[in-house]
Image 1: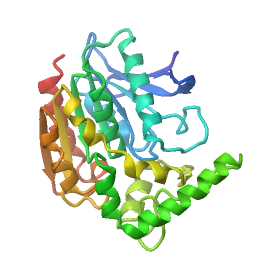
Image 2: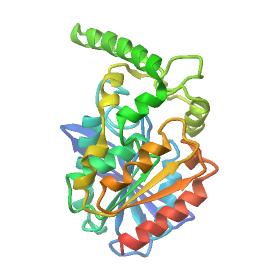
Image 3: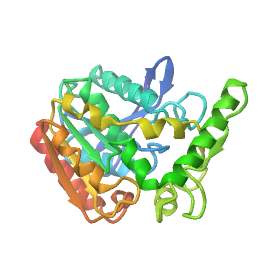
Length: 304
């Protein structure tokens, strides 16, 4: 289904393009540059508990200005997509949403479904690795401050954080299996409060991405904290056939730069870009530099 076509001063069209993932409707936007016949496509979605409106339009517009089509979507349970419970971050379920989105893109008219790249950030930076590992038709991957190893991220957060997360996750599972509403924990909070992310600057970094008026619910079902620590896309890296750009932030307090750098050799063809930035600077101070590097990488590996 395609509706809501609009044009901007950047001379692109944005269409609403829905798709189904395991029987649930997911909402997507297809950006296409004017005057470009069958452009290659960059598929993108947000990281942990993020929605497509949380700063990703700027990346989509930057890439469409370079002649790429962009397909930007919301996961099940987030944004304009269907699905319950709301806000559940389940890596396996989100990877399935990615796979469904890519297949939808390949069936679209007006774009080159044989020239598809994946772009992910933070948790979705791990998802794109998982999807590419299972899909040899993917032509390139950009993984920005990517969550590649749940063990490394859990160690960086500390033992106390892991123990609190486990207790909260078990509490939520008990509620699930007794048919009660989820027990939720904050996505972000200050360092002296418990949340999925409570490193210095995390709360400000996430909330700065949320558009006004801020109606986003800063909470997820706590069972998420039982799954994410065991999510290790790095173990699938050797199965990725296409070129990969890994972007590490040397000042990242959420995903250690060392966990990204140590993953490079696990890929057959990966390039590491290490920058003096924090986890959320890609939506602020580092945006222009990142877009320049990432667009150059796409230009090299995703010819139009």
